[in-house]
Length: 32
Image 1 (tube, rainbow, N blue to C red):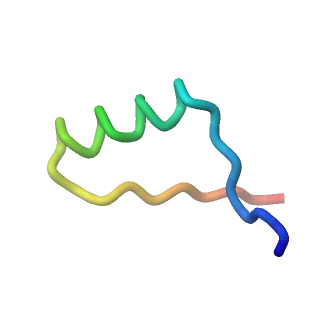
Image 2: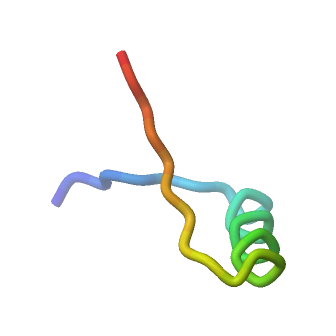
């Protein structure tokens, strides 16, 4: 199976921090 999303440990830590701080889901958009 192809990995669709790859994140470093630091990136995952930041995502968790933002989710906890804002109490909301996070959406990432990549164009191009």
